[in-house]
Length: 142
Image (cartoon, rainbow, N blue to C red; front, side):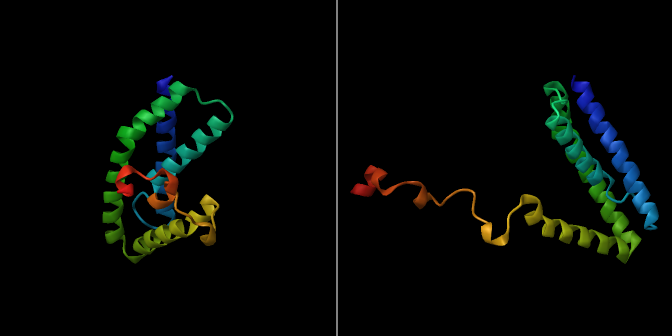
């Protein structure tokens, strides 16, 4: 049922917000520290786990996709504006934490994708390589 997808999303959101609040309190910041991001990662991992085990019906997945398209971008935008305001009022610690999180995320892209710097190739070949010379158009022959 679609409602199960919405319930799964809401559960992940609540757990993420609680973890974000706890992280903020541990670091001495009176703000939620990454709760929305934690919730989205939790949703990704839980849905992946359920899909791999065949326990995520199509209707439940459509409930998650419905809110992905509508609700999540709004919540992320609201949380981002609050986090920026909290970072400026929280001082240097919050700004350094944000910069380090972005740097760590960028550094982990090759690790998570399983590619090394040497293996990086463009996904689409250039247009000249895509068409063999024997299949030239009529405008090329004149």
